[in-house]
Amino acid sequence: MQLKSRFLNDWFEFAEMYAYSSVCKNFGHESLISPPNMKPYIIGISGGSGSGKTSFIRRLRASFSEDELCILSQDDYYLPREQQHRDHNDELNFDLPKSFDKKRFRKDIEQLMAGEAVTIREYTFNNPNAQPRTLTFRPAPILVIEGLFVFHFKKIAPMLDLKVFINAKENLKIIRRIMRDQVERGYPLDDVLYKYQHHVLPSFERFIQPYKEEADIVVNNNRDFERGLEVLTGFLKSKLKDVVL
Image (cartoon, rainbow, N blue to C red; front, side, top):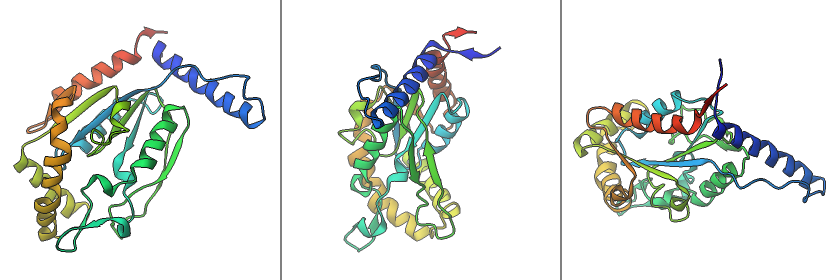
């Protein structure tokens, strides 16, 4: 027995029609078919560095197929090192809204909304031992946009149908940041602590925390995020599972 939903079926019907209309346009027959007024349900997930966004999203991803849900990460839109801002000590600051190519980020979101796939090169956080992959994101009826500044970007925030803020105590966030940056990215401890004090925390207080009050769902991740994940997963499945065929 296979589960289908009216929302899912309608959305894929839209994607097929849009793809056909694009083919028609390429052959000079623009008026044959135009895509219906259908767009994915878009969720924004934000929160401070070390709050647990990545773990939360991995778990959310595991509950849905790629045909049901697509996740686009702001992290894959970092500008090159030479375009990054330097602080008063001439240290590169990767924790500012201007650290990202937000125009391309917005363009790729719009492309997915239009039913078209997006291909980008994976960002490897300046790890010389990491081989970047070519990532392809395919349209789906649920689109998750995640990243530090997705609520702050003025042309992206209005696209969001639901805002989810992952919250955690400051001492827990810095411990998680140390563990991640040392183990996964190979950064020395003094560098991690410097960046947290001078880059991460000021940016959180200015560009991220103020939007917590605007979030539709706040998930507290001081111990775990299981209840918040359960609520969001159930809500999204209710949009997909209308009928059983």
